[in-house]
Structures are given as C-alpha cells and as structure tokens.
Image (cartoon, rainbow, N blue to C red; front, side, top):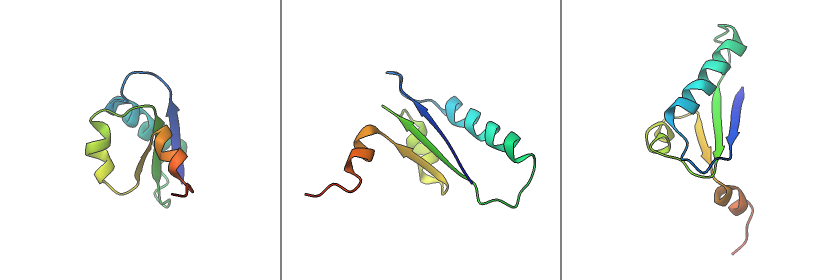
Amino acid sequence: MLFGEAKWTREPLTEAVLETLIDRGNRWLGGDTGWDVHYALFAREFGQVRQTAGQEPGYYFFTPADILQVGATT
C-alpha cells in the first residue's frame, strides 16, 4: 500500500506533515497489519525530515528535480 501527499509551499516540509500522513494511513488501514506500507512525499523542499526518515525503508521523498530526472538521458 502506498500513501502519498504533495505539498507545494515555499516552506520546507516538516516532520509533522509526515506524521499526519502516517496517521491517515493507519486510520485508513483500520488496524489491518497485513499490508506492506510505503509513504511518499512530494514537495519543493524538505527540511530535516528527509535526512531522518529518508534513511528508513518505506519512506520516499521527491522534489521536482527528482521527478524531472526520471528517465532523463545525458
């Protein structure tokens, strides 16, 4: 299961946004633990959250530059 959210503010994304996404995912799953859960965040800029949670499996962070580089040829 993939839960994702996009934030397009000029402020760096905070840990609170990730925590809210995780909470929403948990509520949606309703306690069902049989899922392989992943979280994806899309934002202009990430604060410290990308350095801390980005090291854990199942968390993905994308900026516009990341998306534009997908499939790009050099």
